[in-house]
Length: 307
Ligand code: 13P
Ligand code: SF4
Image 1: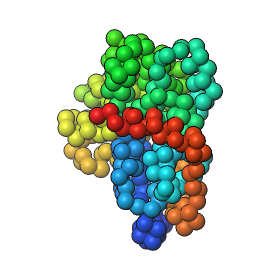
Image 2: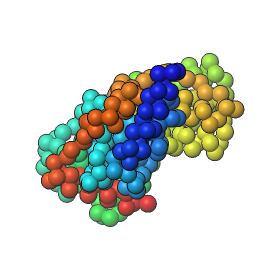
Image 3: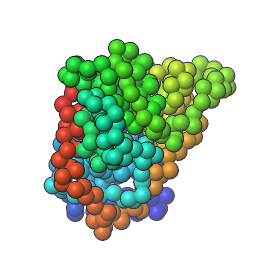
């Protein structure tokens, strides 16, 4: 505890000195999420908030694609990544060249890419989406482009889960998976229900479709937090990265959280000491080639314009 307090105090001091804010994803460890993070939320909320922050410096307590999105939307601000190695298996699963080849194979089919991708991949895309708005985005794109086929990349499971909601549109998927969510199985859900009678099961749409089908609700990290706030289940399990339950549980002492634990190794790379170091040294700064950034920004802005 004394070490945590010392880091938190130093970070608060440095934030004032540098006119910096810390954006914290819902998967961040509680000692970051509940202390130094000024703005917290899911990927969609962090992207939206990144546009409005009144600061010179943004520190991303999240993974690299989230920092890139913040930089795309704030080209004149300094965006710091406490650990550049904090990546994402989905972002790793597809390259800009893959998208160019897919466009040749499916001429005229719009490309919607998940925000969990590199700026280079976003630059080859027509629209971005997050787990919080994927259904809305594909419906809007189909209507705007007058098409009934969309390339939805790179998360195979997100595409298949969204497909169930939009039977009128054919979603062509890629083969990327989240290394955290792909580990959950329908048997896990059956075991949870047997061992914890009455438990309400909430799942992230990056889980395999059979897992989502076995759950009571599927939604983004913010969607799951809102479900607990609104429905107040007596007993709940979040089928997602396990720091999330720690963070949501803080606000709901009356709810019993069952906590299986799958951690995201990339999210875990962000620590109080490296957030402090980032603000002390002003490293590591996220830079995006301006030619790439201009095109990638368009895909993100088109997504944000869909309400
Ligand atoms: P959300 O957009 O739901 O916060 O998800 C981000 C993510 O990385 C999930 O694994
Ligand atoms: Fe990527 Fe999965 Fe980690 Fe989210 S939980 S950052 S999708 S690897």
